[in-house]
Amino acid sequence: METYVFSSTFELGVLLVVPVHVRIEELRPIIAAHAHSNTSYEIHYAERGRGSVTIGDRIYPVKSDTLYITGPGVMHAQISDRNEPITEYCLYINCRQIPLVKPDFFTTFTETTFWIGQDEGRVFPLLKKLIEEKRHPQPGTAEMSEAILKQIIITLTRMYCQPKKETIHPNARQSLPYAGLMPVIEDAFFYRYQTLTLEELAALLHLSVRQTQRFLKSNFGKTFSQKLIEARIAAAAQLLMTTDLSVTEIGERTGFGSLEHFSAAFKKYTGLSPTQYKKGS
Image (cartoon, rainbow, N blue to C red; front, top):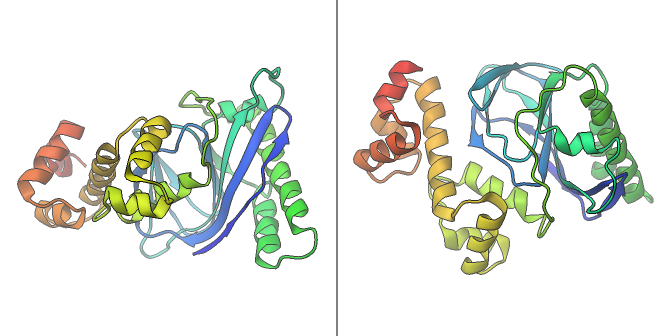
């Protein structure tokens, strides 16, 4: 994985934009279902490989040159083919409309919380250019990076205005407190869900346990325990659908202390037992 972070904020039309990071990564086989905070947007571009992305209850194929954007509240899970893993460019930003400013062309950007299609050379060259600026900094890199980010948002907004746009979740416009904490939180639940504790998450965020709980509740509408169980259930569901592992093995791999605990939690969240879910997949 290659990750580069940003430290500036800028305005574009009615938007206040806080870019967080851009990364190149070969996706592991399964990225469990998750949703971003109420101001977060991810731009995903598959440079090569194949797999799929699940949005809500729909599955979309992903192949070379697929571009898709996931915004606030959109549940999505990614599966990368083991033999042809996806190499993904991913740009993560926080964005909202500036209060009391009349909506303009860029309002469409915040209101479009899901879009998928072929890039056809529109966004990928800009992502590559952005990576190169961050990989090999020069005088004026911060200003050049901001200019490229603005081009990306302009390009995407133009694409959204075409008939291919698909919006599946309303956007929530709220403030951007601690915007840089969002990817830390999401990565923690993606990659550490088996053993993650509230105290470990608080340490990663450099917040107290109480502040961490408040932050999760205000930005995700969930407690730590709720987000952790959801992350484990989402990972388990993907494993049930895509592997031949036994229910017991999947429960152990996803952090549940016993088969009984796993089965009860899974049925509570999905309405089906793990065995029923696996048979129906």
